[in-house]
Image 1 (cartoon, rainbow, N blue to C red):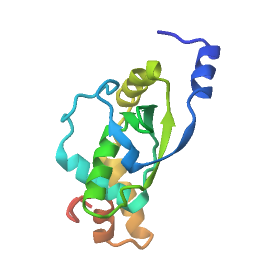
Image 2: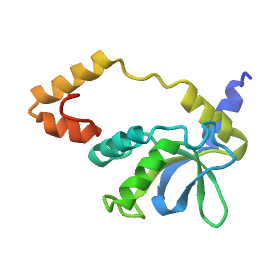
Image 3: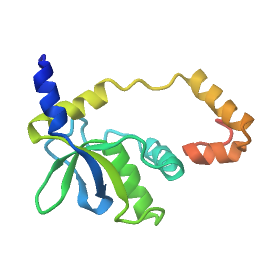
Length: 154
């Protein structure tokens, strides 16, 4: 499906970026491109470690739900990692999270786009970045903790 520039501009205009408290978010049952439970738990722990260290760097994509709540249609892994951090007491349940609010008729497309076009880092690039952090004075243990991996991997 090809969109005109006017359609794209209208979608962007209708999609404000804002902050929403964690406790107002729920994983959407209707607009998720990824099936629930398809993410390895180890991946969630690593993402939680990264969020604890750096915060949420990429907004969640949400649709307005009922009673002031928002349904997460893109960012389910981030939401699961945040749930882990809130459960452990590392984040407050009203922690403000960056979100992009999209119209319901664009939510599944947004979810699919985010999941289809993600390219993982090459391991060599990852290790080179770890080496730069260590050169900048971070310890191997600090780097490992920030990314939820073992010092041996670093």
